[in-house]
Amino acid sequence: MQTDNFRLVDLLLDPTLGLELVSDCSPHMPLAGAHSIEIAHPSDWLQPGTVMLTTGSLFSDAEIAKNPAQALRGLVRELVSAGVAALGYGVGIVTEEVPRPLIDEANRHHFAVFSVPREVPFMAVIDRVVEQTHSGESHVLWRTLAMQERLLDALGAADPEQELTARLATILRCSVLLYNDLGNVVASSGRAPSHLMKSQLKGRSGHLRFRVGKWSVTADSIHPGGEPHWLVVASTRHEVPDALARATLEISVRMLNAIERSRYRAAVENRARQAAFVRELVTGEIVDQFGAEGHLESLRFGHRPRLRVFVLSSAADYDNGRWATRAATVLDAVEDDAVDLARLLRLPVMFAQLDGRLVGVVPADMPALSGWIANLSDGVTCGFSEPFRDLRTGAERLRKAQRALRVAQTRGMRHTEFENVDIADWLLTGHDRTTTAAKAAEQLAVLGEDSGYVEFLRVFFANDLDVGATAESLAVHPNTVRHRIKRIESMFGESLRSPALITAIHLSLEVLELEDGRRRQSTPQR
Image (cartoon, rainbow, N blue to C red; front, side, top):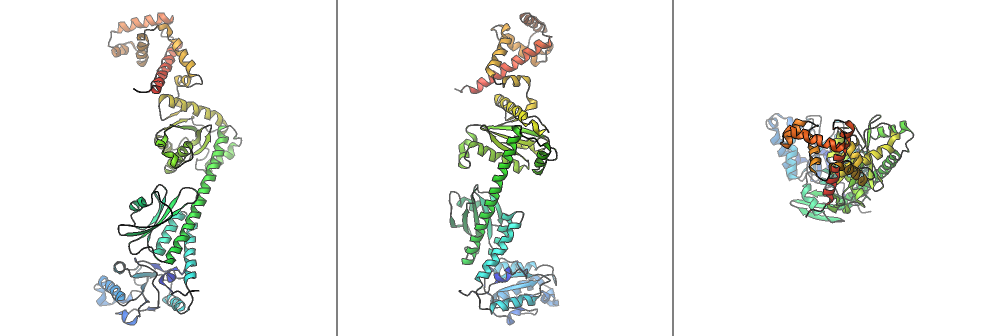
């Protein structure tokens, strides 16, 4: 096996030492040795390629203490000139952290500075360097395995993508970003201009290298089985570098593939389970109320929640047809958009596709519900059942949600709740709308073909049967209103004070008005 020098990165990857690189530099320089020095002009005692270890006690000297920042910057310049590989600073002895002037000067020279924890003796670091620099063994395999182990630990994090990108950025000393197919940043670590780099990725795939201003960029496309992703690494100091870095990137790509595949598979399985529950609910197959309530509570619907069943329909030109680039059917696209919006608002929601429409269930009492309804995509119409708790009545709630949807469609509204559906809406959105409209016309046929009486009744009912208000609205004398009322009563053969006649006329007027509105919407504009 080909030999390879022991590098600073090998020292940093040793989990027993807990060293942390704190400056902006490449950690891949070879090491020749390590020494602990606490005297002035330490470069006189150090060979090129060695590591200097200090606790900072050198800077407690009275003369140096007059301007410690200048002394710290001078030390970095001295070590750089002498070809020293790195400076290890023991924290928790003289200072609790590595001094800021030391880090700033090291960043200007891309010089390596790392912190040594208080509990780690310098001799442990020195022994490790001496042992490995004189072993004559190849460090490539150990280094690769150590990097893999560091990256694999990210899988146990609550946000594995973010943890993995952060660890990869630390190892490579580069900015690392993970994009989804829409160009949104899923996870990132570093300061690279994400908005400038994503434009270079659109419509491409595979392994890419390009420059964005001062940034050298490497990008790899990932296809985990769901939404495609890009892993992007960018640096201002060098092109993303050698075979070791390439191997590390390949490992990261495979890990991200595994993470995304697992996440995608879990999401698909979860959606399938939720769809099955919704179908059972709306077809009346829920028999275990207690068990179903427990399932809903586990999905953040709350304890014994009040629910609403809803039905969604979409326009034929939903999303101007762009949905075809991201979903198999328009229903899939509508469902994905509605689920994403609910996730953004932290609103629990479950969907199922049933008879060419989307059927779902949401908690009725969450404040986020109103925001979700208001922000559903254009072209989506929604009907809701009234709130309920008895899960065994799901079939009835579905019918009411469907009736509410028909009302919303008839009136050109974005959504309607069943409790807001009045009797006229109920009649007009029944199974035989033509018959209902004909019945309403028949009810008012006694008024003759002169529409003046119909319009008069509309104004009279709009003014709550008030003679004075009606006269004012029509700009006529109140006696004229009284005369017309008597004429209409003679036509119907019944007083307009009769609740039955008032109800019949009011409902007929509402039904005809809704039917006229429907005809106007369906008539092409010239």
